[in-house]
Length: 412
Ligand SMILES: [Mg+2]
Image (cartoon, rainbow, N blue to C red):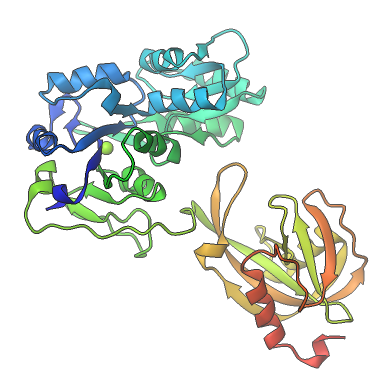
């Protein structure tokens, strides 16, 4: 049975233990049995409104034993995250409970002064003026922190707008992207895992693939989905695919059930897939052009994104003109590369993008090599058998593919 396979259970609340004020069938019994078996329990909720203590009391009122330090709310996690980041003052779009958690962490909640960060949560009393104030402060330089980006949460009879709806309003007004603390982001899972003794077999149990399952998988732990049927994503490698599916928490004790092993891939889960280009440009001596990029400090082939309305040939020519001052002509396609292990990039904003990169062999048709673009630290031609050690991992293969199909006509 699933319960025997783990020492510690991270349990989502809404949709797993209760919905609104109603305990879900079998939840109290299942939680009691987990405790009897000596399992560690943490409740992980993206509800930013109550404090940990209030939630522990709510659970007790429903007949579920819970200590406040077993409850990990995204509000408390945000307060802990900001305290560790050294943030001392915040403006809060959210509930009294969220404010209380921040104040308990020693962070001043300010209304009139300029804060270091704006924390966006949600409650039923928010209005346009809260979004206006948050947006102005972010424009003035405050960090934009979201307790989570959930779109909706279950209530009896349907779904209600959740924090993500409020975050989206601030995001639309500012054009900025928030730092997200709650599920599926790592900080919340890291705090939960840090609260458990080491070497425990930990599993996440939740009802939302995009939040509970994705978050667990990003944190490197398996995930059990509470649902009538497993979700269907297009690919088996999708991080949102659960490792097991149950209908109620009591199914954790059903004999014969087991769980798929989750092996954490080396790449983060991308939010989107984008077209990219890379160039193999050879000089008259058969040396290859490499650039040292400012964002990662490593040498690599010139690369860039395809912009809207542009062909890959136009994109590669534009990138080389902008970055190193060379005019190039495309000779042929080397290959199309998309493997996530090397093609998922995380931008400084935190956004992870998987590139499908067309690598093109190019010849120089004009211009002169320079390296004064802000994104480029250096640019130089290297003999293919004497490349720099810190070359981006996939580029030796792309270069080998380019040279394998090389004819003398291309090396002038
Ligand atoms: Mg849930």
